[in-house]
Amino acid sequence: MFLLTIFSLRLYWPVWFGQTWSELKRVVRDPGMNPVAHALSLFVPIYGLFRIGAHFRVMHEQRVIRGLRSGILGQSESLWVLFAMWFVIYGLATAGY
Image 1 (cartoon, helix red, strand yellow):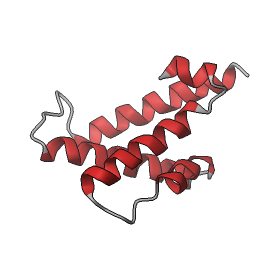
Image 2 (cartoon, helix red, strand yellow; image 1 turned 90 degrees about the vertical axis):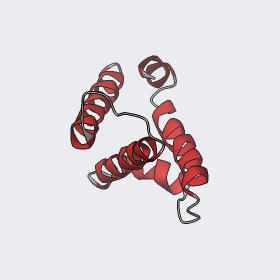
Image 3 (cartoon, one colour; image 1 turned 30 degrees about the horizontal axis):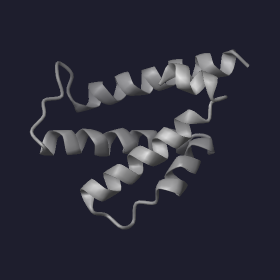
Image 4 (cartoon, helix red, strand yellow; image 1 turned 135 degrees about the vertical axis):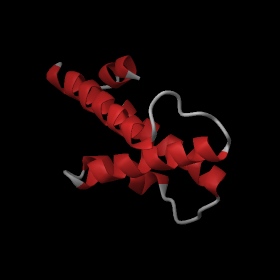
């Protein structure tokens, strides 16, 4: 994901965000989930961070519902690790430009 983000001029991250939200919409069966608006929310300062949290929270909930273990970390710790990964990936991709 890191290399795709860098080589796509940072456009891969919103595309991935929208595509996974579309898949989650299908799994959750919630017609109110809009993948395009969700992907565009990344460009809104502060609000985008809350949408990232919501994104990974839904991903985690689906993982727990399906009976998969979340590993060593609990839900909140997993979200913080994913936030940190996002900041590093996006920060490095931005620093390259």
